[in-house]
Image (cartoon, rainbow, N blue to C red; front, side, top):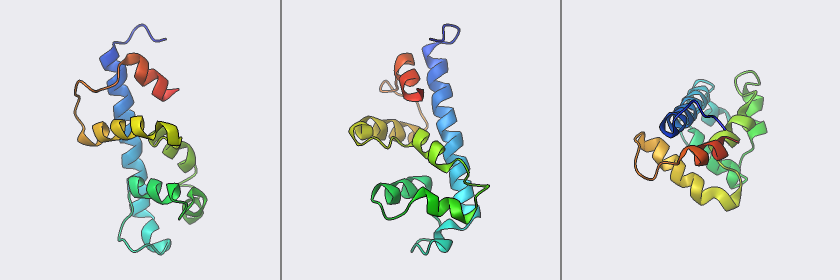
Length: 120
């Protein structure tokens, strides 16, 4: 366990890292024109929309990676970090994602140990 960092510092690092990954994936999806190349009926696709399509088994991360293997080389790993693909844990993760999207800290923000467990 990290002893040199406060609970708040670890929580801030966790959420800033998630935001960074979301921005990178959204930028890559837009720049690669993924929605158009995958024949989706939207102009641009976001990481959240991609996750929903994968969850509903309408699309796979492999099909996105084929569009640009360099840009999406770690797509599976990164999406698993951002979105909890374990069905039993989706409720807790959806709460974290809402906090992340709101970009502010509330009393519902995870504690140091909860943030470390999420990163593990």
